[in-house]
Length: 117
Image (cartoon, rainbow, N blue to C red; front, side, top):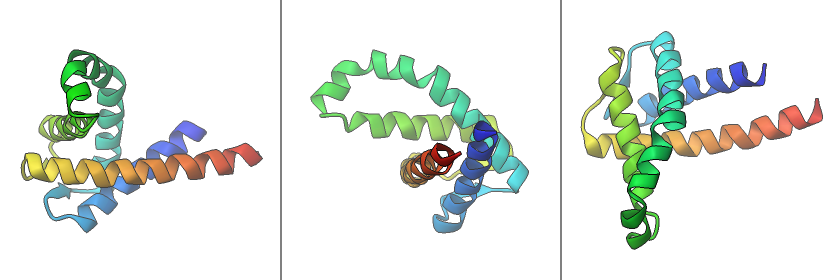
């Protein structure tokens, strides 16, 4: 149940990114659900490999390169899907920052709600 609620909230967060920033466009809530699923899969499967491969650059930039990796995941997900478009890499960077902030808020809220149950 917790995974489904988190998935729906992250899809809503993508719609919030679409509302707040014009560089990211999502066609519908269904497209947002698919995009949230693809982003989750990319962040689970591909992101750890990219973090490991770019570890020297990440250390030199004091961790700021992780923002670039997040933007790449966001941009790549937009290229895989039809109802999810990103205007460019800058838009992917800003969109991924907003989406990550929403994700952190969702995670904190989920822990508080499901800790009581």
